[in-house]
Image (tube, rainbow, N blue to C red; front, side, top):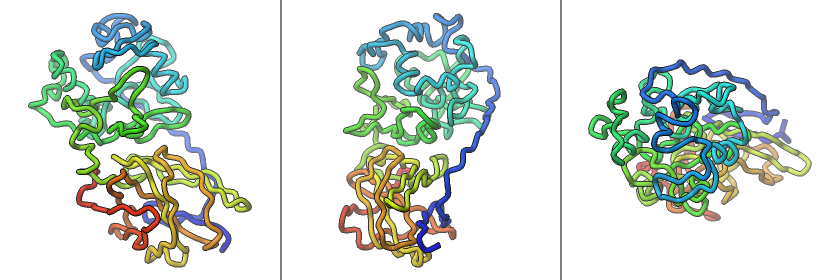
Amino acid sequence: MKDTPFHLAAGRTRRLAPAAALAVITAVAGLALAYDQYSTDGNTGNCATCHGDFRASPYTSKVDGLSWGNDLHDVHRNNMLGSDCNACHYGERFPTFIGRAPGGNGLAGYSCSGCHGRSQDGTGTGTAGFGAGLRQLHWRGGTTSCVNCHADSNPASKTPVGENILPPFYASPGTGHTIPNNPCNPAPAFVENYAASTLGLDNDGDGTFDALDSQCSTAGATPGEVSRGGLPQLLVTAHNPVTRLMAISYGPACTSTDNTIYYGPLSTVSTYGYSGQQCAIGNTGAYTWNYPASPAAFFFLVAGRNGTNEGPYGQSSAGSERPPYALNAVCPLPQDLAKRCE
């Protein structure tokens, strides 16, 4: 077994194995919401009263006044979801529910709430509460009708989780989708910008967008832990022992703009004896690298960074933080866990 690389995730050492496909069916109970559907008849009413028919082209943003050059439907379907209709539809075009759907390819059945809400704001019943930040953004814009059913629409009654907290679909984008992975919308990728928009989403509804929000300040927030909590696990998705090419997937941490792989001999995994690093692997959640010939058997982990600070390396099986690479001289950044964004 000495010729088989290993990887380390969530405090466990695992031998490489072909990735297994797991089908999960998620049911979200229907809820009596103020606006349970985008429109009342497929074209008008509810959200469509202000935002217009979801298929009317071109859509003009209510935030920055720019034309999307296409309708809301096709930008969401083609640019973000890869024509995965089940992410939002129950088979028919109408009705389209805001907080429930069959679920797409690897996506839970959250519909609009998957990108426009955060589960941490939820009440524990379906997607109720997920959109507190979005409702408060409307409140600040003068649309206060949501408060008739949602007390959290009034900023005085609730403080949503920070801008840096990932919506459910950002954290688990499934397969075949181009969903943003960072609600702070950092330069130069600006992952939340679609069509002609110059701004992403104000996820927490405080009126401050993207990196201008204090929770997204790289000077004040160290990236969190990669593949933590609701984020996708660190996995080896392909491996060629002849060419020493390995493909991995992971869940990018909050405020991260880049990531680094740290590795070491498998014999030193208990003491985290790192021996090398692979810098600048990006922040897309996937990377293929030419792993070293030596050591023949090794462990590795992925740590996030944002240009100013490096995030944590995860926790050991005992629950303590793994130590950073002491010889981090190739792509060094300071680690300050007191400022982590989690």
